[in-house]
Picture 1 (spheres, rainbow, N blue to C red):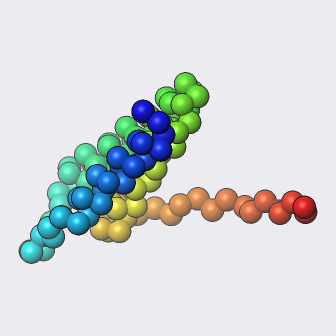
Picture 2: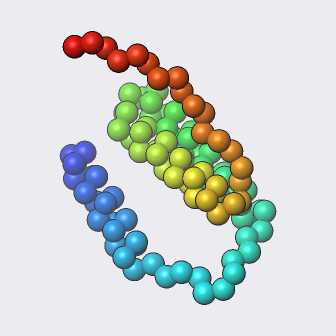
Picture 3: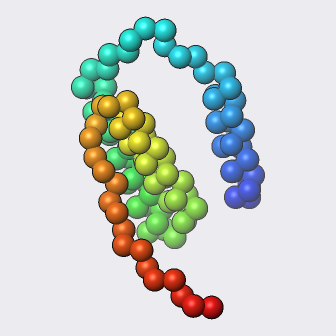
Length: 96
């Protein structure tokens, strides 16, 4: 399966979920144990990213770290965790 086919499958799957998901109609309270479980998922995705980077499967590594970042950002948006993304210094633009 080509990388383009994999991307299309992921996009189609995500579109279907976004188009059909239902929102909870009551206040949602999440126990800290559940938050930690989701954090463990983020850690697992990060470990996968490192594993695939070592195997030089960079597309899979990038996908895994993107999942990790998405899970972390969702937890942050829900107010379940606190963190700031590291700010990387901008490299000077090369003159062409």
